[in-house]
Image (tube, rainbow, N blue to C red):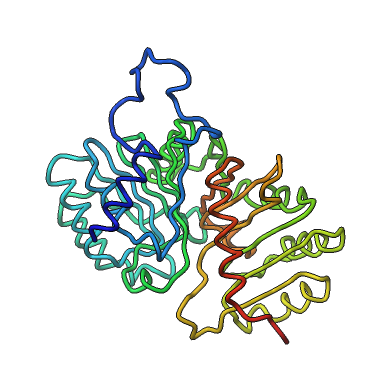
Length: 339
């Protein structure tokens, strides 16, 4: 635990996750406000290596507000921290998915409701609310691929992006407010946000279609024909496309199509000690137009067109470097897929 807290201290130093105003206060220079290209704007947690303690500490750091949207919440310590925030006067609001995971989330819902947290089931406007985000004190957001379920923490590949870009944080809060009240809105993209069901498919296709040299992919699912076609087209125009996933018979036809087009697919067995749950896409790392994506979106029609999901696109280092290293390292340890 002390190592995780040491990592958090370093993380807060890089990501500037304090709750006060930026250096210089409201009258400071423009350089004091994080932008999408600022080194202080974005930082990346890679799970399971980073551990969940940095996220716990962000919850504990709240002074005024906490907004959480979670697909699956089965982490009693996180629930206790949220209740502790509420007990000391923090306005804690939680939206939990009900479709498919309602029974799994039922215990957390009841506990939070009984401990002063404003908890609701997520809007029925979407097939699923698969978004996983935390916003603390309207100043820092965490955009995650991970569910808050303790049983997954030790062996599941996941990503969290800590985001202090004001326009991103404001956009996430505005969408939360709409979803909390059941209103239908088109969420703001902020500086770099990727929303389902509104923009994720065109945004991800643009990222893939813009690749000139390399594409690195990790995802839990490979069921979107549009994404598969774009990856095939990239390979046909000479892009080196490398995909790492956990093997499943559900994706065999997709893997056949991809491998036949020259895409390199490597997989972990379903009983391997690491499960690939991250949703990461990296284009042309190291080049001037590099871009990386991480978020809750699976490469499925449902995720991209019908669910409430959130991801983020990044162009600056070190986030792109870290997200490039992730699928590449996992890819090297996986086995080549064969039908």
